[in-house]
Image (tube, rainbow, N blue to C red; front, side, top):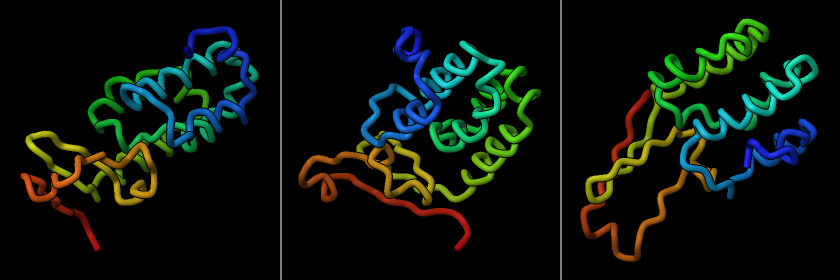
Length: 143
């Protein structure tokens, strides 16, 4: 979808609405980040000025591991060299991972920041009765 002409020609405000939609179905937030990078790169000269805001509002960086942020996100040199505010956004996301909520259910782990609990993309759907069958909730972080 992010490679189509229709997507690449979206205005910035519409792209922000689309990427920040709670009901957006993606494999991972890296897909959202890559879609944003493709959109900016399509008309880099005129779109770089929107990059930091779109990165902050459209990509849930706190769902991307700090290692992945360093090895994949921040390696888009043209983005971070041209727009220093993007580095500020990623640094803030990496700092926020110090307060995590881990929901463990039957061997799978879902990681969420406390700030994102109101988001539909941050909730785990559990079958009825699952709380009594192996669900454990652990909260970590500073008060």
